Length: 424
Image (cartoon, rainbow, N blue to C red; front, side, top):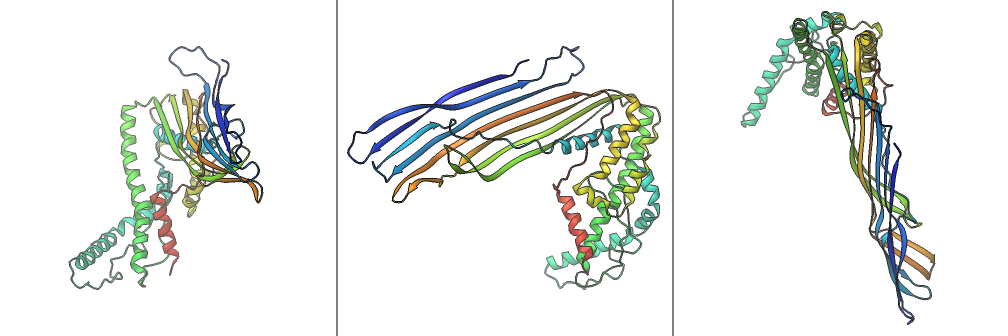
């Protein structure tokens, strides 16, 4: 199918009034680009009306800069005037941000799809850290004692009574030398490691114990409960054996709010570029399900297991998710023989504006013979949609991991807890 491009021309009307007593110039119209609308579709594939086919399209709508430019001249002949309308002919077009997180969103959707197909149970990590898990369970009494004592001290202060001395050294602390915590965020980690130091009874002791308690809960108890639930869920799945089709999707919002400059009527005008949108991906796969699947119980890749057991590897995964990449690669290799059909759909949507700063001033000439141009309500708009659908012929492979600094609230709490552990 051919691309469709439509260009609409508008006008900007100029008006000039001289101060020297000469006749007033009447308004004059100048043709200028107003709106551009482009549609670029992919070739039409006649399918069976059931299975998806590969396809793509791009739709771009641009409305050129529009508004008023007032002027005042102090050279001969002195006077004032204005230009109103579209200024697309002598200006740059508004732009949309690049599709920079496409691989990140795809990998996130693939991780969720693989969790549906394979689950996130990994008994190899649980067995490797069984000793730490046992010590963590034995330290549960210290956890509950600390919580009870902390709540009692808080309630006493709240009622206005003198605060009872709080001695965390009497079996009330989180940081028991036999307790443990684990790590990896974003992929339900199962790492459990004991803290390096005993309980700190300094003036920072209580906050450090709270930090250790958060880490123990986040990376010890939550993964343990997840393992127990997944074992029970896997037993039910073996009995029912009803998984035939799985899907995973992910979306990342686009928020733009930056100040920059662009060409507006041969002037590097300061503008505010703002807009919103999204980058999304959906992956769907159909596959044959064996009655028993060892890959759903444990990782079979020694590299993936080794990465999970490296201390603090989860911190690296916050920024470059190596752990998920290794597991997704392993899943693709293990499940490729069971693959039947599937597709990947990727979507980019953005809508934004570029507004010239109301205080923008263009000065032409040398004093005292200068002309001043004032920009009033000059704004351009853009809407862009891109879509790609790819038909899969094998189990989808992960893309190269990208650097991402989007830390959520849980990761920020965990980072603060790790930093608190470093303080003495």
